[in-house]
Length: 274
Image 1 (cartoon, rainbow, N blue to C red):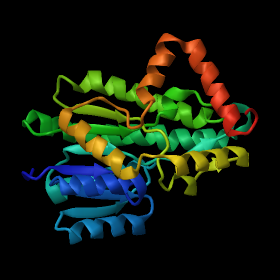
Image 2 (cartoon, rainbow, N blue to C red):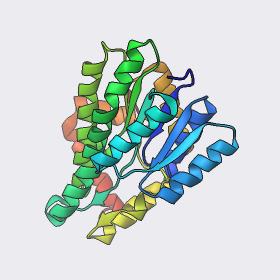
Image 3 (cartoon, helix red, strand yellow):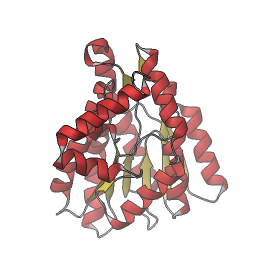
Image 4 (cartoon, rainbow, N blue to C red):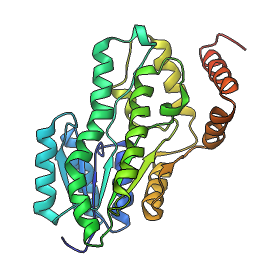
């Protein structure tokens, strides 16, 4: 393939995905901007080209394997291969387990988990080939701190994101000897367009998530910078928010206290306690 490294990013038409597209382009990558919204993908790719970057756009529904196949074929035809795959596309569902329709469970698992698996299944052979030639090769799976947190009302979303973390751990052990790096990104709340497709039968959860996103002190650009650094350093776990590491340590070493604190945080967010 060409000497210029290539990054393929899903869900790159807005928010975190767009921020990562700009960051990788600034670092010298050719970028494939993909999104289920073709107009948004085209808009971001156009912005990148105006800066002098090489960029293509593609409409991609991560739940359709045929679209993954077409994307891979196009990237190979355009640039010869892929160095970095960023699985960022995602949706969210809120509600307790029994209150969340099974259709919503299936939807979030299909997009957030199987979408990641489909992308890796199609692109890992290309990444292995790059690594075998001594070139950079890296998978970035965007999960969420919800995959660790066990926050009430996020059982479907949290389950999907926890599975992405577990899947990424397996990829790390499978791909390490081949020279393919793996990173899993676990941000807390970041202001993105996630709420545009957000599903919840209870507006309480919608309002709670909107408040937390609005109060976030971490921007999409901050997370994108952390991702780029993780790829350069071949770092596996990417925690982007203050307090994340402490929360993980508390959960590991004092789980009973951790779960009590999560329940109290949820109650305060709903106005059920002072």
